[in-house]
Image (cartoon, rainbow, N blue to C red; front, side, top):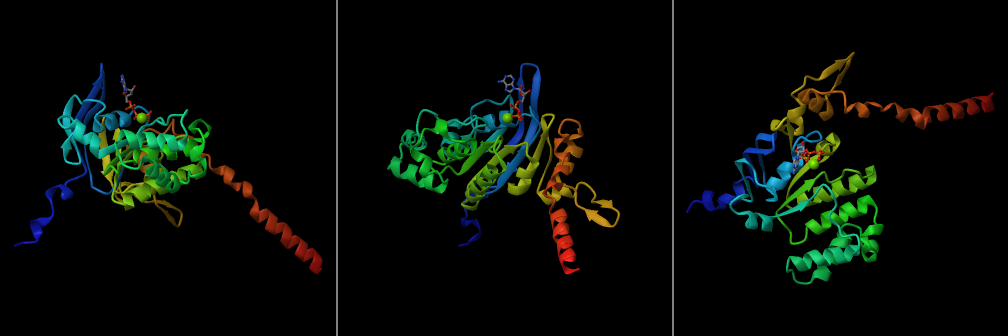
Length: 293
Ligand SMILES: Nc1ncnc2c1ncn2[C@@H]1O[C@H](COP(=O)(O)OP(=O)(O)OP(=O)(O)O)[C@@H](O)[C@H]1O
Ligand SMILES: [Mg+2]
């Protein structure tokens, strides 16, 4: 007996396969033939500007919306023909938090566990509260949570039942840097435990931090798809005098998308000079000199 063929075919299949997906809303042709694969257990980032069609694609893959053309499989299951089975394999954390504000954090989790017919909903809720550093806040109404706490609760809710594939639509939009880092750690943990993550983002650093592969959705198609290193290699390393500079993913993205105007806010990094540490040490040095003389 050969051992080569004993691995089930499914485990070698991509967790998500998107082929020729098209979608229009009236005369707006949003998706014009989208193709990509997502390897099982990896983090895949879909990058695109506002209105590029990221949420539309996530809604198609999570069976909330029907494509006009093309096919997509999730966990080996066709999203159109096997939508109920697909829903059992996935969770979706939408762009806008799905938390019920009237309930406490713990009650939100218990509710989902009950809806999923799981045993010991209270135990599941407590385990997730602990994992997402929400144990203390668990008894408070979600309406009193900060944006980061609400987002963490939202992701915790979507993990109930351990779906093998999760969709996160802009998981950190509106969060402060600390809360973003916490959510990033959560997402990394998920992938380390074998969950496949497809996330959409407009934050290029988020894709750089998290993603095994990055695809850029622009004008209805995927215009680039690769690892961070592959995308960076698309642009020659710029030379500034004697220092070789690597292009950032942001530069790669803006060059590929061909627009520079609207997203230029990130260029204003001159404020970092405020720390003034060199000035302070200079003063200390002066004092020492004066004292010495
Ligand atoms: N139900 C709908 N009816 C009509 N137009 C829609 C509908 N849903 C999306 N659109 C349009 O499709 C385009 C893509 O929208 P989508 O929400 O997928 O973009 P997005 O990439 O998620 O943007 P954002 O970064 O702002 O979330 C937009 O022009 C939007 O107005
Ligand atoms: Mg969106």
